[in-house]
Length: 143
Image (cartoon, rainbow, N blue to C red):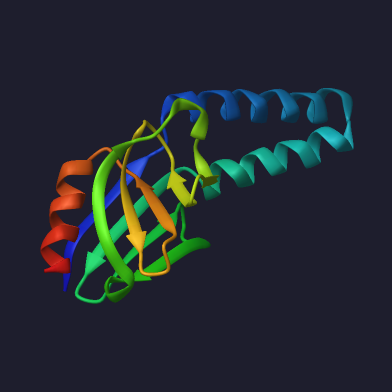
């Protein structure tokens, strides 16, 4: 049974520039026949599809996250989570999959997150536009 399920879409700060890059690179491919533009456009398109959203599910056993269609995912057993708390990311941590001090972060928009401290001492931050709700569910499951 899922106690929490939420999908956050990437912000316009990410979708806009990548969308413009896709249009520009495909224009150069169609108008000028540059194969490099086609390859670049396809890379941008793949990045947009892969990172268009971040889904989070908390169930009886684990916390699961996945980007877009689910090719990039992470599962953390609740038994490995020592603590969780809402945090605010620094702006320069960015979006996507990022190394942060002490661990890893998954984020598609905004600066809010829930930071998990794992049994091995590593940290994992889940970017979310619902930090209080996600944290409350995790706290409830940890008890």
